[in-house]
Image (cartoon, rainbow, N blue to C red; front, side, top):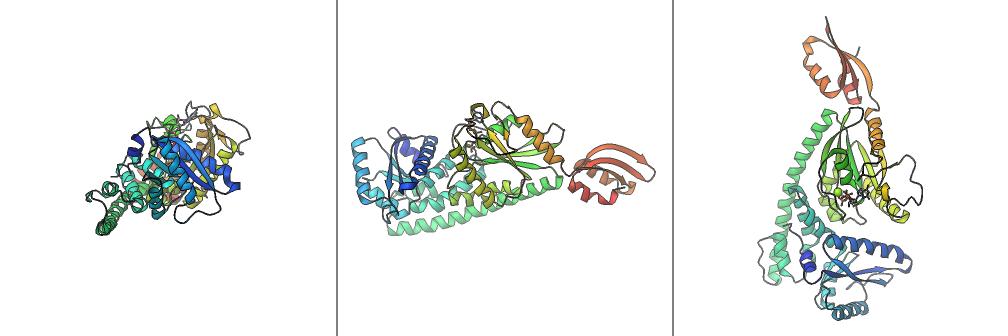
Length: 424
Ligand SMILES: Nc1nc2c(ncn2[C@@H]2O[C@H](COP(=O)(O)OP(=O)(O)OP(=O)(O)O)[C@@H](O)[C@H]2O)c(=O)[nH]1
Ligand SMILES: [Mg+2]
């Protein structure tokens, strides 16, 4: 593990065709259909293709099967006639018993929900140990209880469980095993979090500023970091190409240095289990000094606004709403420009680098804001502090006087506080 929840196995059998299903009320039809477009994109990322989509109009979901029983029969019929559909994906979250009932009703064709699909993609894309641990824990919490009578998958998830069909006692031991595994994983993650916070603290002490690049999945975050810093991160036309935050040093036009962090993309209804599991990764955002919020400008205004509101919701949830946010509209080489962008936003093409000089200027302004040029007199008895001044401030001039070293330095607010007693 995490390997994956082997949804991709289902997809690689046959032609990887899947049926998409959603429930909507009449006036939600439009947004429901858009959400299914996104589900189809997620499916593509997992290696499958949409065979057909079914939207049922219903005020409330059915307790047993989410969609009505007539619809279940219709879908079963459709799949029988088609003969080449190996997976049914619901855009709504399903309970374990709904999945079991649906699979029974649809001739044992595998049924999953949107969250399981996203988890599967995360499992496929996790690279670092931390990413893998985080995905595994989210899978265990969400997916394991939803694996129906398919004993083999649970054994895949936990590892080391027998592969016979689940009898009553097997389910019991599976549950115990899950609990133990989740506890072990949580302990490992806590350890990694500690290391991360130590690193963060040392970064904070050094006074170097950090900007987190955030935005909806596929907005171009990794491409931007690559263009600005030659980070060499994988950037592709796939959802959730990036799961692990990468931080790189960036030299601004003024010569000032800062750090840029690429982060995991956001998506509408990001499964809460993933948000929790990826909390420490997402916290990069909470500890960043500035946020670069990237919007894909090649999409129409409705889609842009929908994604921006999802992004803002997550920024708020993660407690980062009070930070300076630079609004960046990306892919300006193929942008629609159907409406003006918000004031103060910057248009770029992360791919070609067009417009990025404006972004760098803006970062320079933020980094230099609050900086002051100060004269500091450091007595020779404290000459160790001179090294610290060189580390934490930009030294412009140095003179050796009778009573100490007189340094002219550009200091940010941290350095101003730190070296206050030397100010002359
Ligand atoms: N035309 C055009 N395409 C771009 C631009 N920037 C990024 N792309 C493409 O958009 C796709 C997604 O880019 P990524 O950088 O992987 O996006 P991301 O935001 O890191 O995505 P996730 O990591 O999946 O959340 C890739 O196919 C890029 O080549 C741009 O300025 N213009
Ligand atoms: Mg990325």
